[in-house]
Length: 96
Image 1 (cartoon, one colour):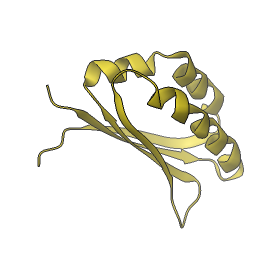
Image 2 (cartoon, one colour; image 1 turned 30 degrees about the vertical axis):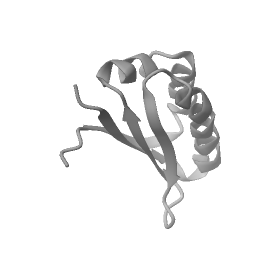
Image 3 (cartoon, one colour; image 1 turned 180 degrees about the vertical axis):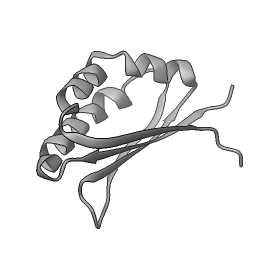
């Protein structure tokens, strides 16, 4: 099976940018240490700092599913639930 690429966008409330960023940063090290995580990089928009984008590569969809059930991911979800205005997760397969 092909590797899975994730592009995940999170938009923080304007008054919660620092708190959301702090929670997103907490995800990086434990996630990079997970089995099946190939790449896990966080970006912040240069013009609108409330927009964050993760670019991720996983060995397969099962590894992503395991990630979404980890304590650190669940903790993040609970921490930012009321601090964000939008989120979108795109599961993609590289075609070239």
